[in-house]
Image (cartoon, rainbow over all chains, first blue to last red; front, side):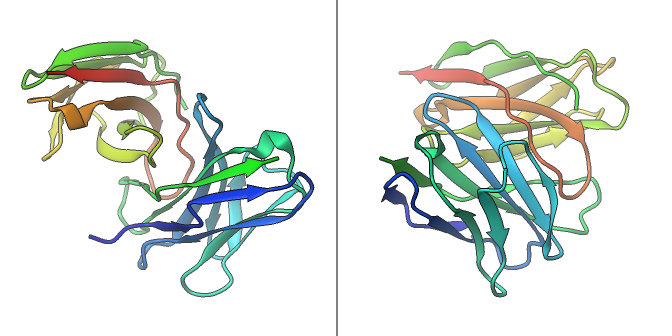
Length: 116
Length: 111
């Protein structure tokens, strides 16, 4: 069964460093998302991406964050200058288009980001 | 998107049906009820969704009241692997669009 994959599974970085989290969505999906979950808290929406542009972003997704689809398969989340409070599990998700009202989002296993 | 209210936790005996309630009294006519679950910090997993009619798939059944102000997710024969946090999400149907997760119900299936 097709699945969303994410790399790395765990990333440790120093405060102020840039990190790039990588995702490979399911191949025929056209909508892509990033969510995050701080330990013990809710899953929070960060950004959605469609047709090579951001379609919606949350207030969390400030100028320190950016997303890119550099080729036909990868979808990346970049954090330019990491803060301690960016430590969280980051989930990538993707969904199909052309399915009417149906909107199942498939989530990857997540990247655990630890900022020291 | 309408707010949802779920009990914070529930227990269920293995092999019995697990009935997880959700209140969404402010739901509007074009909003769907979606259920996802998250097993121990893994990525959330879609279970089922519905608008008005009851729905069933290989994982679960979804019962929506006639006034659509509440719904129940039913896992007919819960197993230990169903231990997870279950999220009821109400949103406008259609492609794309964010999911807004609440705190969900932590279901513990016990032997």
